[in-house]
Each structure stands twice: as C-alpha cells, then as structure tokens.
Length: 100
Ligand SMILES: [Zn+2]
Image (cartoon, rainbow, N blue to C red; front, side, top):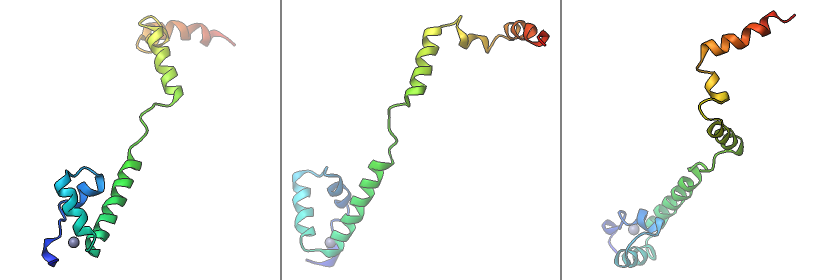
C-alpha cells in the first residue's frame, strides 16, 4: 500500500466507532497493514478515553440538592427572603446588640 493513502480522516471516527460500513472496512483493511496508522489510532483512542474521563459528574452533591429544595420550600417569606430586606435585618440585630 502506498504511503500517501493513509485514511487519516477516518481514524477519529474509527476510534469513536462511528464510521459507516464502507469507511469502517476501508479503515480496518488499511490499519491491518499500516503500523503508523495503528499508532495514530492508538493515540486517538487514548484521547477518546481521556475526554470521557474529563466530563464532570452531572449529579449535584446531596448537600447542594438539600439546600436547593429547602430554598424552594421556604418560598418568598422564608429564610431566604431575609437577606434582601435591610429593615428586617436591623430589627433583628437591635435586641441582640443590647444583650450583655
Ligand atoms: Zn496508514
């Protein structure tokens, strides 16, 4: 097989397993006899594995989920609403300041 016919554009798809049948056969038959494409495919496969591991987990931590649900349940009059109300914050702080 001539050196200038490496199906390099097929190798990423081959590593991902998303080639159609014609391209898959072309890539596989070339890979069977081309060491440099085998090496390149190995690198693509490493990259694919790395990308799969690099994706962060989608489930939020349980503590965040619990706080979020509490915030939802408390609604507009609940603990979350105090933070944006300076008058209410002062009214609560005054008796505390007078304590010994
Ligand atoms: Zn090749």
